[in-house]
Length: 71
Image (cartoon, rainbow, N blue to C red):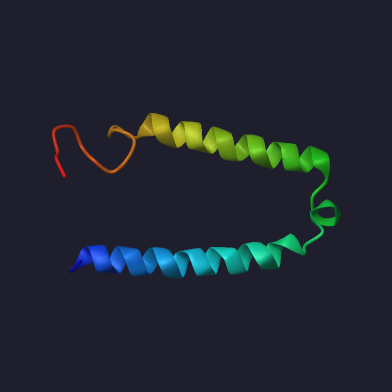
């Protein structure tokens, strides 16, 4: 592997380690003391509506490839 593939592979490995460390840290947080069930519901709804809005304002296909592009 050369070039960007090596960078992506190393980036994924580093990203996975960072994600696991963040999840380990966040697992110890008592979310119910910071965010009640009603507020959590609205946070989830807001994120989902934001994702729907972003999908509607983009004109490209989902993913990274454009129509007609190969590997």
